[in-house]
Image 1 (tube, helix red, strand yellow):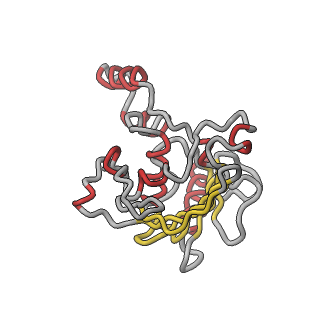
Image 2 (cartoon, one colour; image 1 turned 135 degrees about the vertical axis):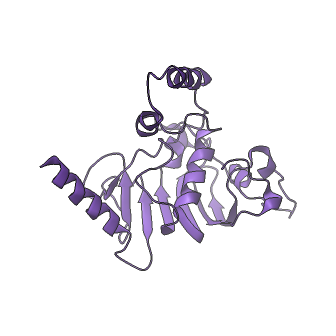
Amino acid sequence: MNKRREKVVLKKKSNIWKESARTYLDLGCGENKRPGCIGVDFRKVNGVDIEQNLTLFPWKNIPTGVADVVYSSHLMEHINPDSPDPRLAGLIDLMLEKKMITANEVTDYVGDYKFVGGMIRFMDEVWRVLKPGGQFISTFPYAGSFGYFQDPTHVCPINHVTLSYFDPFAKDSTGRFYNLYGIYRPKPWKIIQCFYDTNGSIEVAMEKRIIDKSYNVLSN
């Protein structure tokens, strides 16, 4: 009985990616899923099609290169920007060495535990699930604004310059390159549009760049 139920669930999930020629994901949608999107959230509430903890990397319930557009609204400020505790990484390595746990168990319950920066790892996952040339459209409160500070669960402050760490060719208002991408070398993006109010929100559209060897991307 359990095996039959498992097969039905897997079949249902695999069909999601074939329902239309273009695929739109709404990350952290909750009960307010954007029309026409596949809703992704860690909570199984109305509107959620895929249950996925978006802070557990990689997102094993979302295949690579399936989305044309990924949306997120007031999600990124909730992503812990820190790297994992190195003591936790050491403990996991020790337990693996002593065969107290298996690599599959780490994948299922912990995921990637040696990444650099939670927001960077989040952006790398968005990049992964997008098709070549796919777009990421996101809205979040400007770092330091009242909207950012009012919510006690906001942990990741982002301003318009923060986004330049992800675009190898990002420029400031005078046309000069920021030259920030080379610090962390995440998966490459192109900032298409960015509107912001320092006392309000940021609305940004970014396009997935194809990796070029000149970018010297750090992560795999």
